[in-house]
Figure 1 (cartoon, helix red, strand yellow):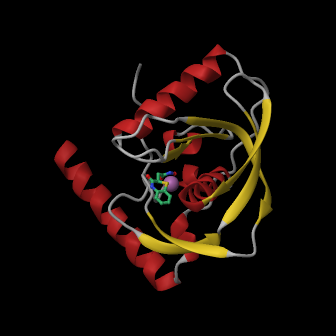
Figure 2 (figure 1 turned 45 degrees about the vertical axis):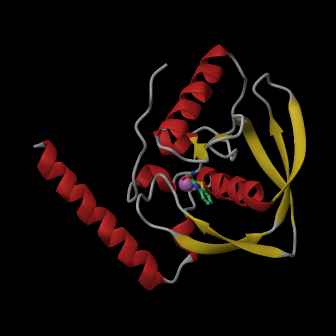
Length: 174
Ligand code: GNR
Ligand code: NI
C-alpha cells in the first residue's frame, strides 16, 4: 500500500473539474484504498482524488472519532441531489491548505447519489459534519476550495502565506 502526495494550493490542478468514472475495476479500487490510507496518514476526514493529482470524481471520507471503529466511505461519481435551506457553520480545514482554518456556512443537510466501492448505485441523506464534509469534497471535484467562500482579503492572505511556505520548502529541499 503506497501513500500518495497531497497537492498544496496554489496549484492549477486543484482548479480543474474532475471527470466521471466510467467503470469500477480493481485498479480503481486500489486507488481508492491508497486515497484512504493517505487520508488517514495526513490525518484528515476526507480526500478527493484531485488532491492527489487524479482528475476523477472520487472521494473517500471517514468522520469516525479516534477511539471509534473506522467507518470509511468510498464515493464514486457523487451527486448532491438536495441541499437544505437550513444552513450550519463548521470550522473547515483542507489538506491542500495546511495550517489554515475558517468557519464556513453551508446547507445543513444534503442528499447524495453515488456509486459504491463495488460499482453499485446508492443514495443517502447526510447531516452534521458528514453533510459539510461531502459538500467540501464535491467542491474539490468542481475545482472549488473553501477559501473561495472567504473575502478576497482573507483568501489572498492565505494564498500569500501558502506561496511563502512553498518557497521555504524549496530552499530546504535544495
Ligand atoms: O480533514 C479535513 N477536515 C475537514 C473539516 C471540516 C470540513 C471539511 C473537512 S475536509 C478536510 C480534508 C480535506 O481537505 N478534504 O478535501
Ligand atoms: Ni479539502
